Amino acid sequence: MKYLFVHQNFPGQFLHIVRHLAKSKQHEVVFITEPNANAIQGVRTVPYRKPAAAAPEAHIAARELDGGVRRAEAVARTAANLKQLGFTPDIIIGHHGWGELLNLQDIWPGVPLLGYFEFYYHHDGIDVGFDPEFPPNPLDFPRIRAKNAINHIALNLGGHGQTPTEWQFSTYPTWAREQITLLREGVHLDTCKPNPQARRSPLKIADMTIRPTDKLVTYVSRDLEPYRGFHLMMRAVPHLLRARKDVRVVMVGGNGVSYGGPPKEGGSWRDVMLKEVGNSIDTDRVVFPGRLEYATYLRLLQRSDAHVYLTYPFVASWSLRESLAIGCAVVGSDTEPVREFVTNGENGLLVSFFDPPGLARTVLRVLEETRLARSLREKARQYAEKHLAMDDYLESYDALINRLIGGATLTRTAAAAIEALSRPARRARG
Image (cartoon, helix red, strand yellow):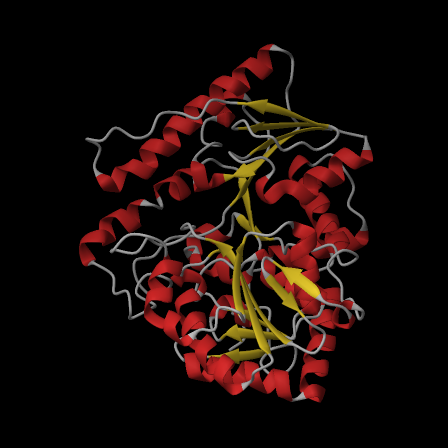
């Protein structure tokens, strides 16, 4: 079959399915993207030029839509060139977030469209206003509502959608959910796996060497920012350092902003928090290595004695899935996206997002109660084997694609998986 994928940063969320399709050598896989250096054998990338930013005079509430329709136009021009060269896909798969898919059914009418629906924005009740430390400005509510303009256009294209978690599914209005399938993402369990030898030799991360006798606390986020609880983690660190002299803390992440906004006073959130609590932190025992190479990141989590994952009610990070698969003793925030993966006392421990001393006490409990830590690690891995297997994810993905194309007979297992995935999602566990 002929597949067309679209994402402004190839391969984006489609890494695993694209690799899977290309590896079979039975399909033609084409990927429209902004230019980048990434490459996957068997996948032909077709670049489009990033369009100009929204005009400065455009209303702030309309700028995201303006950028989306500009991208839609640029991608459609590229797609039209592909069509002139004789390429017609059997299915189009992409991410709706940037508007790139909006015009493709004009180029190939009738070709099935499967769009990734990541998040439906709300100005109250979810991420905005969740953290009282950063109260929302009601004057910003129109801009937040308008961020759903691309979502709404996409939902009216007549295609189908997918989303990876029950919680993300629940952010969409009831009327939209019939078009969206819950397709749980998986991880490579043979790569993300426990390593019993990891604690038997020193591990060097940036300027810190973690010795076998040290207690290692890890924290991972794409960027160190409030949406991922960085400010709460930083306030917990002095408690950890005072309680045990053998604690070492590694906080992985960049100094930019992936979600939310930058500090009002300028600089990075790391700068802000070091100004607040830096005098209480022993810099010989805490390190900020930035973003790590994947192999180093895996070794770090395999060595971790307690792994902290915090988030607003927002899209769950890949690091949460990977830490469970690796068998980390996870201490997570008691927020809905985390509760979907972690059951308190079974495969992890949950703490209030807003309680740094409580976070520190819970981490110390994991460090000190050997039997508890061992049980959490074992059950984290068991959870991943049952719910996060990459093969299950890819089989369900294949089945969904085949259902939309209508050209292949589903296996009984795949058909059952799609039927289950298509049901309305149950609420996340409380």
